[in-house]
Image (cartoon, rainbow, N blue to C red; front, side):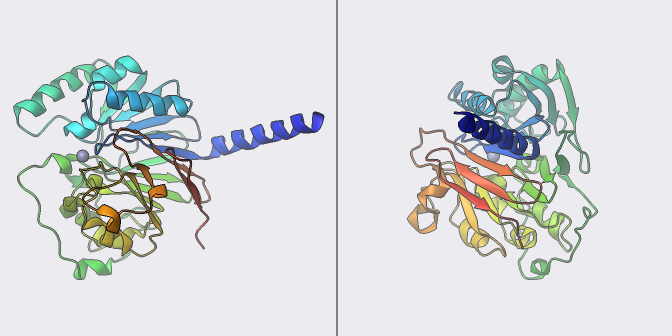
Length: 338
Ligand SMILES: [Zn+2]
């Protein structure tokens, strides 16, 4: 009996130790929108986008479920990357459902249009009643225990290389720059972030499109290499060209896609052709990709649209990390890169 108790205590101590050192990331399924929850070793937490506002309560419910599973009593920073509806969600209802301490955004709405303006107004009223800040490239979001650097915000990117980065990117000469889409700039207002925990680095540029990504990695790669790449714009074709993927050498790509949104067939050859890529994980099976492109089912959180399962990335300061599929418990550890 005593031996069992000692063993249990030891196991609890190991868990506490891991929890104290790791960055926990939950890529929540919001059906082709974005909602990524992060918990730093200090316990500080951040929600990066809030999914869709409809069907009413669905995505807020999934966010709260993930926050509770992560052991949170509050979300310290809610970052709204930009004001497209699949990221802005229903913030007033979220604030009513779960405590949030600070809101971070890219500034005032720049995109005209009644639909944008109405939902921005509701968001801004809730935001202005609490502590909030707007960020620009080079700023930090002060999540204790993890460095969160703003690489991009409101169509402006960092101009100088991050420490250790800045190597020339040979693929800039061989891959043509995709033209800027001028019909809708909202995607490119996105706040793009780099998360660093010791040697572990994770890149997430939200919905930044390829033309703006190009500026971050051409002619020199200002970002450097990363371990995990949360694929831009749900892996829609407008967000993926190859220059970024060639430069960052991610080991794992994670798509926040829906069954019929994102996960464009052009994405997989570019991701799989990037140096160092080991696996692609997805929130959904992509119908457009079909069996030929999608990874094996274990790497996909939702096969059936109604499931709402998340992918959980647990990262250690030595650079190793584990990805777990909450649908079936399938897990894979990526050991320290040699
Ligand atoms: Zn989006």
